[in-house]
Image 1 (cartoon, rainbow, N blue to C red):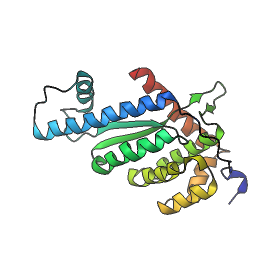
Image 2: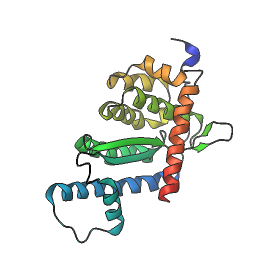
Image 3: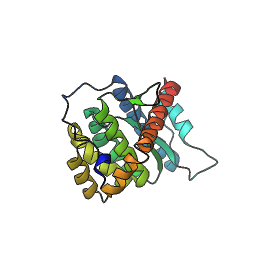
Image 4: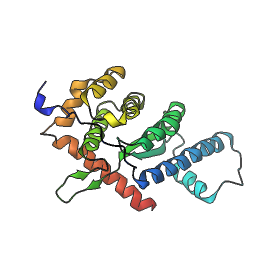
Length: 214
């Protein structure tokens, strides 16, 4: 393997407080999850719920298309790789929900950061987090099945302070049947331009959703 393209080994940084926006996204995700379960129950059982809050009602209306009864329900999360809030959201919200409704949702995972004027991305916890985000995005590109890529991402996130150490990535890739060489090639392709483009597009997606939802 070409050593010049290996993800760098980083010393774990001191734990920092994550972006307040991460917590806000987790709260919105929780509302969407609750709304999904209520909405799916209503749709499948035709039961009226007069106490449903207006905000949840708005979400329900936007996620069900009567003209397409088999349409998937949009479910989206916005995370950063080196954050305990991400670990907790994956463990207590995202993974349990996906285990139950993975075949009923159109799941999308985007990353939080700040696009820079020179075409790069600033990540809250520094360059090591940017690399971690890129690795996880590559896993989702190479292995679209959420059962594979979410398991891999959760494996990394459990030891988020060690992202992007090679040993951690290799161990999690082996555990979840992911080819480490393909993962590395994706992140390093075109002198890392491909991985950076994945991250930049993902960060822009999160920024657009934040502007849209307030």
